[in-house]
Every structure is written in C-alpha cells, then in structure tokens.
Length: 455
Image (tube, rainbow, N blue to C red; front, side, top):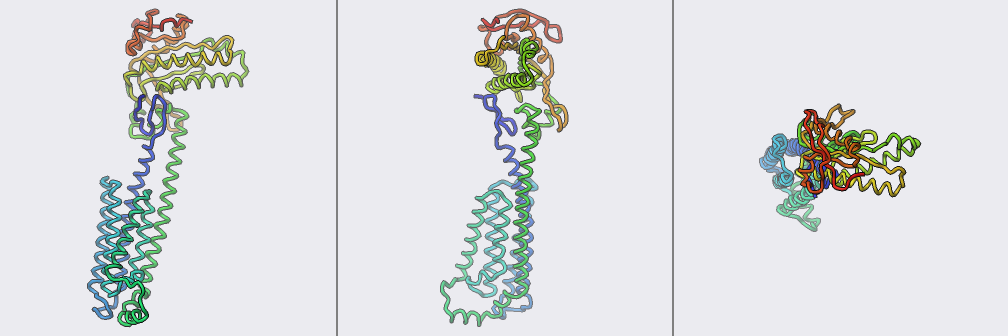
C-alpha cells in the first residue's frame, strides 16, 4: 500500500481522501488571532481595574475608615502592570510566530494569578474578610476572562481557565478568612468598623467599573460569535471553492490549488511520468445504433470503469476525450513502480470491460486499445480560477498516443514501449511485436505486447 501526502489530501492506493491539514491550518490561524485579541482584552482589563482601584480609593487620604491607601493603589498598579505584560507577551508570541498551543495554558494561569493577587491586595487593603469578595469590582473580571476563552476553539484551555480562576478566588477567600455562618453580632460589628469602606464599594464609581466590565464581557462574547461565524464562512467558502476546482482538475491536483506550492504547479514543471491512453474501438459505428439517452449512459458507464481502474492503482485521470481517456501515473511525484501500476491498471480495465460485455451482452462486444509509454513530461495547471485545467505535455504523451493507435495495426488490446516493460520488470511476460519511429526525434521504438493478448 502506497501512502503519500498531497497537501490537503492523502493518496492511499491511488484513492484521494481528505486529511485534516487544511482544517488544522485554519484552526491554527484562529488560535493565533484569538491570542492576539486576548492581548487587547488583557490590556483593557488592566486599565479598567486600575481605574477601579483609584476610583474606590478616591477621596481617601490615609488609613482612616479601614483603608490602607498605599496597598490599594499598589494593587491597582500591579494589576495594570501584570495585564499589560501579559497582553504584550501575547502580541509578541503571535507576531513573531513563536506562539505554541501549550502557551495558552500558561497565559490563562497567569490571568488567574493576577486576578487572585489583585483581589487579595484590594480586600486586604480595605480591611475586609473573604466573605466580601463578591463586593469587589475586580471579581467582575472573572466572567470577562471566561468570555475571552470563547475566542479559542479549545475546550481544555477553557476548562483549565475555569479551574485556575476558581482556585485563585477560593485561595483569596481562604487566606483572608471566611465565616461560614456569620452571626448578627459579627455582621453589626463588621459594619460598624468598616461602614465607610463598604459603602465606598457600592458607590457610583465601583458600579461604573462593574458596568464597564460587564459591557466588555458582552462585547467579547459578541466578538467570539463573530469570529466563529467568520471561521465557518471561511470553511464553507474553501469547501465550495475546492469542490468547484475538483470539477475541472484531477482529484489529486485540486487540493494543491491554494496550498503553498500552487505557484509551482501554475508555472509548470518537468518530471518523469507514465502515460496511459485508452480508446474504444469502432465507437462511431457502435454509437450510431444508440439513441442519445442510451449513448449517454454507455459513455458514463465506460468512464466509471476507467476511473475505478485508475483509482485502484494510483493513476490520475487527466482528462476524458470523447470515447477515450488519458491517465497519468507519477502525479504529483514520480514513484519507482509507476510503470508496473500502469500495466496493472491496463489489465484491470480490460478485465472490467470483459465483465461489462458479459453483463450487458453487447453485440459486437466493446473493445478498446491501450497504449503505455513513460518519459519526461511537462505537468502544470493552466487557466484562471474560473476555468483551470491540468495539462500533461511532451514527447512521452505523443508516443503513448501513437502506441495506442498502433493497437489497431497489431490487432491487440494492449501495447507498451520497451522502456515501460523494462522499468516494470516484466520482460518475461511480454513479447516484441515491432519497432516504429513514434517519437518526435525519429527514433525507432520497440513496442511490446503481453503474451497471448492478440484479439
């Protein structure tokens, strides 16, 4: 079994099936865009929490009312500094293409750590216990950070972010102390001592900060939805584009259009390839006995058998030409067994046609001529995006076509050049039937036929 990579497709025994390469590239680009966006969100979050800290402490000149003004302002400065650093780090990782998927786990862990430190310094500076963590404007950063996770398409990162954020919040609450069942006396005593501090947490300024972070959360989720929609549209558009290309190009070549080496294919290249021509004998007389509907079914059935044989042995159906076809072996890269597979494809096709004749009872039976040659060819894609065509040109193609025509003179269904038979290592099962000047340079070429293949 032969498996080789074809950009977004893999060829397995000649059959093209899609792989995840293109999808992975699309998601990788989205991950980079997500980290770039979260960098901006971190900076916005840092600025918001910075303003929150100063607004909460505004008008306070000292430790009166339970405030440690220095610690509160340090918390604000630490928050903005940390989120700025994380935001810039995200930018640099993406821009320099150093970002790797595992780094997202590190970044969300740092987010949780900054949030935890900010909460602790803020509550401790005001002199409140862990029970008051829900009153801090900073806690509203939690839904914002989780909303940022929606920009990614990685559930494990979001799950990890949820876990580490909860660990940070629970850790702050535990460190500052948490009363499971505070008594009325405890509440009144706490309120009496910290009335000014608590009242400030529920004043206009902190509520404005809560509103700002809630707005940022909503905008972030809207952005996540917009990015999801854009990614979906890109995927659908790419799928439709490839489907359209597949109508004009061989299945093995269509995926390469849009990949990194498309320029190479459009410029064309020279490479070794094995060419197989097949043509129905006496098709004109055969078709005159059929009405258009039956003729269409007949040609379609013939082409299905050609494609079946080609797919089984890794051949590319370059094009169908009326009642004939041109197959290429060695696309996108030549292989050492191209000639052997071309011969096996020819035998398979002849067997399929024999079965078809028996099944349908054609009278006269359907006969074909097959010619095979190998050599240097020009391979490339020509045309524009509205009409692309894969082309194989060169002396090897012309010789293969002439060998196919020679099957009429030698009264046989299959002929191949001596080069093909030798490269396939099948000299013992083939016999020479003649030498002819088939090439463009006037060289005489030995033509061989399989033993017992006269018709």
